[in-house]
Amino acid sequence: MIQLFTEHFLGASEIVLLVVMAFDRYVAICRPLHYVTIMDHHTCCLLVGVCWAVGFLHSFGQILVTFWLPFCGPNIMDHFTCDIFPLIQLACTDTFLAGLLVAVNGGVIPVITFVTLLVSYLFILCSMRTHSSAGRKRALSTCSSHITVVVFFFVPCIFMYLRPVATLPMDKAIAVFYTLITPMLNPFICTARNTEVKNAIRMLLSRNTISENK
Image (cartoon, rainbow, N blue to C red; front, side, top):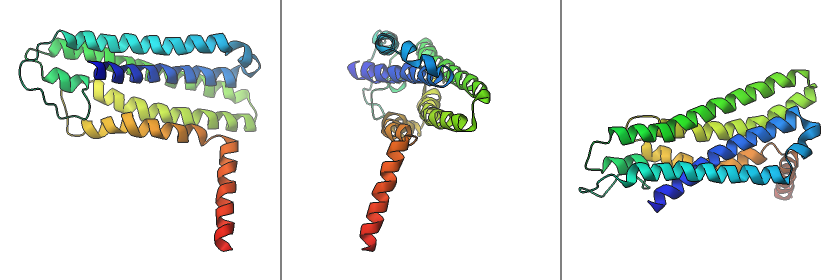
């Protein structure tokens, strides 16, 4: 139960954090002169608290779904972690209702959030029509990294949890992708748009090239 709670707490918190990042990008691009007053310290702390609160409520709901299930048979699951669907499959009772609740809690919410993020970026793209060419390029560079992280995180989550209770052979590979590979790629994706980081990488590569030539 602790492992299940921790996994879904971190996952749900990241989902809300991606929404917060989209709101931050919207304010920075569409309301640049008001950014400092809108995204002040109090607002940032409030948004962090919302991330943790939603993560706690989501994971607590997953615990409530599985805690009352009777487990009287095998206790070995073909998965890397004690995730919700492999755990439900070990229950000695009909799991249709539990699977439906999990699909609503763990699948429908990411779909709604994913669609909301896409709509928010559609508004951002529409608002950039009045910007200059350099401003549009800078805004697209800012948004593209966040959209990449959103797609890498949400698409596997929707595939994993928006379906009936079942385990597929590819589930373990997908679980490794969105629990390990995506978080490791996030820093590189988010910093790849940073001009200072790119200039530092170019300087480092040029120095290495010069040293190799010497």
